[in-house]
Amino acid sequence: MIMADGTNKTLLLVDDDKPFLTRLGRALEARGFDVRLAETVGEGIAEVRKSPPGFAVVDLRLGDGNGLDVVQALHAAKPDARVVVLTGYGNIATAVTAVKLGAIDYLAKPADADAVYGALMSESGETRNALPENPMSADRVRWEHIQRVFELCNRNVSETARRLNMHRRTLQRILAKRAPK
Image (tube, rainbow, N blue to C red; front, side, top):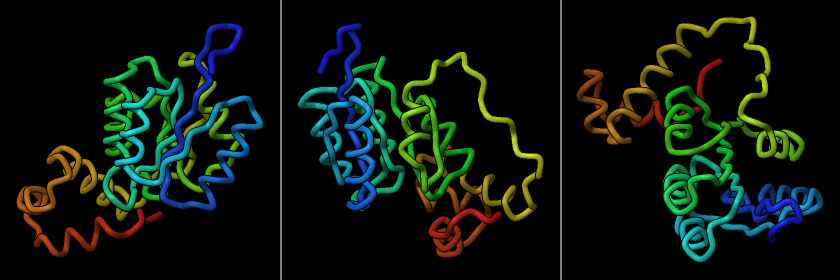
């Protein structure tokens, strides 16, 4: 759907949480978007190839892979698309990777429709929310470092474990958990 001002208001939502996907889809349709839904990386990439949307909201961890693959495919097909990455497993390394692949913002779940809409429609020069006053805990700093090395090793568990001098199974357990506070 092309609006009168020339903006492409098509929106691709990719998330494997079906109830969240439908609620967010309805809320963003009410705000004027032509919404398409996908529940897997494969479906998301297929939608991008069929017709690249002007906007996208992509979950990071999906049942069949990593949502960053959808972000990369969309950025290759339509470099000016505005992409927001959503995740319940937020960390600095994946946020940096998402931005490098073309995302304009990175939101932690649960994010409401107002926050998602605000991120999609914000101008790049707008000021962000103030940084939190509380510094990260030592456990959180360690977890962030592990995530950064994991991303630098192209999400290869064996290579990451070798570089961190850690047993591969221990690393897998750490990666499967949520970030410490």
